[in-house]
Structure formats: structure tokens, C-alpha cells
Length: 216
Image (tube, rainbow, N blue to C red):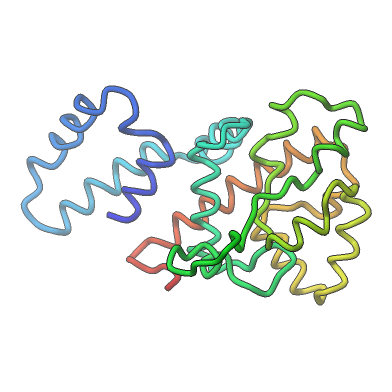
């Protein structure tokens, strides 16, 4: 059921005409009488929705948005929790710092523009939709977000990289869908590559739920 909820949230399955969609889904479950049959029907429907084209084409295209309510961005952050990923440039875990029971005066995590707004504006990128692309955000600890401020990524990223071993950095960048040398890329190229990598991380998080296995 966790996989079904993940799929439904990611694809907005019940966003449009939810009553009709729910009736259709309930109709799928009228025949199964055994738990194994019930699961098989759900898995078959999920496979029909989350095809290879969905993961490799549709989802990366849907991530080309600046909406703060993007299902793709929510699924990406959820996947970081499921995969027990560290916060970018930190040894802390995303799932620990997103824990609603961990109260603090200031939010422990903040959405950080990897290519800061003022930096992009100096480069001639002025459209808010371009600046606030989902693929331009990462979760960092709030004090790192303050220190980075509007510095160019090619300036701050190598500085933060020195905190970690090559293997730690490679794993961190994989989780956060950051291509090698991301901070030296042209901004449009970076967005396109990161959207594809984000979709792959979301898929990995979804698959982590198979069999009921997930982080903590």
C-alpha cells in the first residue's frame, strides 16, 4: 500500500475527477479474493502507470516546474528519507532533520538555490520561473544556506567538497542527483541533467518500498 500511495501522490492519480478514478480502481479489486491476488492487481496497475517512458521521459519533463507544490519535488525529498540519504554537504540525515517531532526555533533544513538567485540574475537569468526550478533546489542545513548566500556555485561548492572523502562525496552527489562537475555547467544544461537524475532517485526510493522495506 505504501507503493500505491507513492505512485498515486507522484502521478496525481486522484487529483482530477477523484470519484470516477476511485470507482475505477475499486472495480479492479472486485474479483481478487486472496491477498496475493489483491497485491498482483495493484502491482499490475502500477507497472502500467510507471513505465520506463514515465521514469525516463515523462517525470523529468514534469520536474521542469517552479511550483512549490510539485509532486515530483515532494517525491524526491521523500526518496531521500527512504534511502537514508545525508543532507547535502552534511553528515546529518535528511529523514532526521525533516522529523516533525524535532522542534527548533529555526527550521533545521532549508531549500537552497544551488545556483543562487542573485548570481543567476548577474548572469542574465531574470525569470522567476527559471530561477525557482525544482531542479535548482537542494536541502541544506540552514546555517550552510546562510553562509552560501549568493556566492557562485563554482566558488562555494569546491569549498564544501573538501569536508568529505571522494567516496562520501560521490555517494552524496548521487543521492542529491548532482552530476559530476555540476557547478561548472551552464545553467540550462545543469537543469536538464539534474531532472533526469532526480527521476532516477525517485524511482530508487519507490523501489525501496517493495516488500515493505524502507528507512526507519
